[in-house]
Length: 90
Image 1: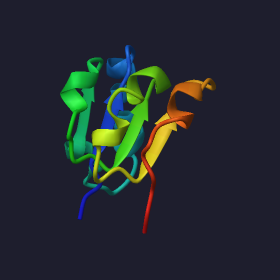
Image 2: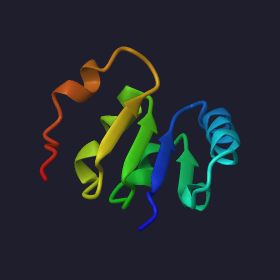
Image 3: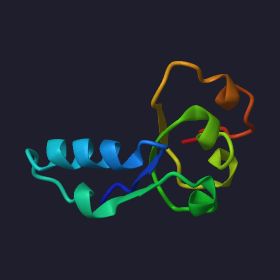
Image 4: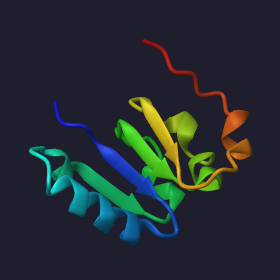
């Protein structure tokens, strides 16, 4: 099953271009499963598996992402995510 990636950032276009450029070098189906936006409302109840995001934006939606397996922050300050209720379970 292909991984669904979300990019939630003010710089989402740049991140998506860079990711697609890197993925073009790899045999993968991921490139067709990348959703990018700068608006957190676009991600509410999304079925993405991986989220690359500005932490302050991710904090607005992380608890509604039931399939989420991984969050990758676009910057070092992740305090807004630390106190979220989301728990990863196997």
